Image (tube, rainbow over all chains, first blue to last red; front, side, top):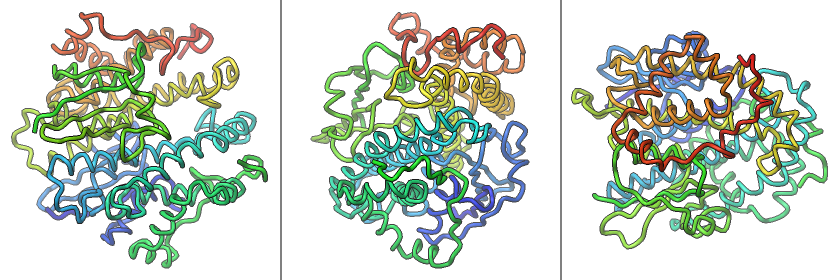
Length: 257
Length: 257
């Protein structure tokens, strides 16, 4: 069945919307990208129909022949839904996979995606360890302690898991799983770039350690995918600024790792 | 294809393993429940094969006819994989759903599950706002501030989303979506009980407000499902203690909401 897709997200920041946006860009599948009606569709009084949506990104799905659209929220649920439809579910060119093994492959892509999104959330919580509703300036002391834990323990631990998955991928494609890029690789690309923006000193030491070569090579390999290259060259990619990934120099000291 | 399932998780605490356990119990499908080899299977040196697993719960899947098992981690990925196999994906008795609409139904179940697991994570982070690797006692001040935000803003916001989804479910089943219980309902059941353990004063005021009747009725409806009732009656359900949901009286004052 053919479908039309609209991504509804805040304007001007990459945020979690970018994880969905990259899937369409990598697959070179047309979609509408807008923040129109976002605030009347989501939240406790949202009118996007059942079930209710806590927050965006919100994907509007218009199936040919249907009178009404569907709305889907939650980044991992959106990516799991889109992955097989956009050829980003890790099964491409694996004709020998039976349907049961293809389902496990897709579940592994969801596992990897969930883990990378967990890291994305931990990074977000670094500058808002107390409350997402309060200002960074009112939780700076807690943020400094949490950022230290993120730099010293959490990012290295996650990166080791990713590096190991890339190294042990039976397809040896340079991606996390399968022969081609999946939604998990796209999310990791964005998180690696976000960390480079927020923590340039840490990134320098992670790169120089040589411990995460697979992760940084994957980042470059995703950037070179035809759809992603065209997207980056277009100038349409929103810059990091004041979203998930924020650069506070005091959270990224020079001897960072 | 028939399969054997083993849930690998820490012994003695419900934790995130319980969300998977409840799916098997509700479906009355046999599974092995163990912590054997857990620490050699997960983490950066884990030997559970590709891709690497950051943490448990870990599901071991042995497909009939396969020489080697598969391992799957990440609670939302495990639940999305199991839901259609255990009749917990929201499509049961909806014979009129075509395959595209059934996929959207499953995606909505994943959306709801992800949102409830987000709340579960926020509750966990309340007693560890700075670092999961440090003691509660070393982050008590930050925890007090974060718990206040959780009680006043976050839990009520999430509960309103759940209550609205139950009220607007076209099937009017008392569940979040579809005619029967899904993995999302099971996770919500456990989170509601966990909140009652960790925040009894808050729970009293949430119940007395009358604003979340659907959520509490759903909790009782899940407890009465034949598989869950048998599980609760068996005494096998692990008590809440020192895991995601912890009762620190100072985080749950008497005038709580």
